Length: 377
Image (tube, rainbow, N blue to C red; front, side, top):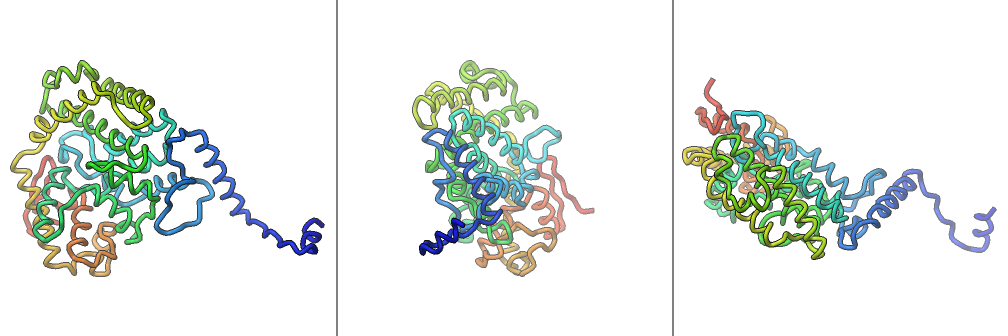
């Protein structure tokens, strides 16, 4: 009756919403209700700068939750379990890998975000995606690939830039994951001098350091590279003698100081203690975690692979039009028609063992790097 009368008066009828539209609307309201409880400084999905390609909203999850799930379900994320953190395929089951590293970063970052009433979903997505573009063989691999690509006119290699490329152009057969702008900004700027646009991204940047400083010390102790007595006594006095105590002190300080300043920050004393531990790692642990011979072997592997695929670009899965052949699907963006970029995508995306396997296929020679060994059968 009401609709008919309205129509007779010449008013336009309001189209009925489908059950799906109703469901999406309810989810949007729930997300907005939850985000209304966040700090005024928090990033909100309703204020997101959006995706490069507009999408229909999900009927269950908010935008940043969807980004997190897309990262976790990506091929690049799964490969992190076979990529080095510090020790290359160590003789033991309890050393960190690149995958366990990002999980630890995520846990620390989420704790801080929740305590500060910032957006935990955004924080988690950035944390889980920040290392997707890391090379095989850890930072030694990154340095080697950076040196190799410059010989071909590529302006260097940085894993944060490659991580952004993975989510924008490599995953999903070249379509990328179509993540929100805020997540992509956090991934790109999780390292380096430029600040992220969101406080959530700044949390991840610090949580990354908190995680690797402490778990790399733990792994170095386990490997026998250092003894507890080698650690800087001033830092231990400020933060605590154990990894658990240090992380706890760093997280509490980060929350307390950030609350007082309205920004993501550490107190001077705690920041100095963490910086001293970080310097200790670079001066004492990282230079000893891998031998000079292994550094040369890593460069030989990556330069051999890069040189070969630059010379025979048709063998790259994407350029050959056969993405997925020989288990290579997901390594290369089909749209990367420039050979150098396609080779970067391919080589940087390899796991440690995949890179060694390809090296052996090309040269017929087996190598041992760390405890990872491939040899002629």
